[in-house]
Image (cartoon, rainbow over all chains, first blue to last red; front, side):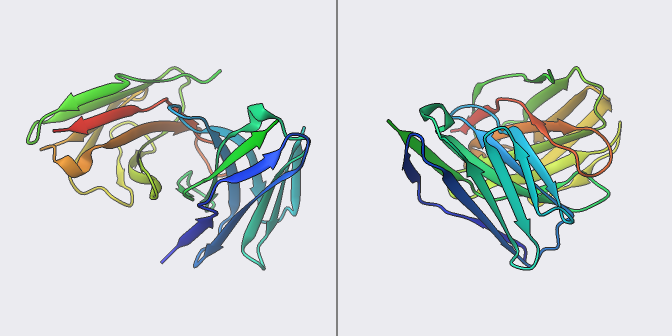
Length: 112
Length: 113
């Protein structure tokens, strides 16, 4: 069956460092991958989308890589700030429809 | 900005009740989704709809039904609520076609007693 794995343990880093979150998947051939941010008590908010034929995507301090051979995506936040503290979800989708399969998310805590 | 409005932030119901959760959008998006989110299990898709009066089962449809009579409104129905349906319910919407982001409401925290 399809499986999407994100680190279940919280990631604690110091302000100013680069945070790297991992999303691994098995038994799935996604056409694209998306990353979302979720704050407590709120719905997820879309951050970035990367397609299967793209290796890397950037948006301001965010960078996403997508390796379909390793079946892995890495999500980087450079120069992290306490305001970046949240849970980050990866989601995989196939072409044609808009149905997504979500990972369970990784909680990021950026400390002063 | 995309606005997704869920009818209630918190809801308490009793076992066996029929429960309606409403989701309304103001963006004319074709696709609408209902998820539930539980600790350790993440977001799981219950039902989705690509058009008016159209619905498709997601990964966990048992015990639920949906209704989409108008494009802007997608309702989730718990036919006979049970305690294992206590959860956070999230509505999302997106444009038609693939490779589209989803826009979420802030959820309804439903407790079944």
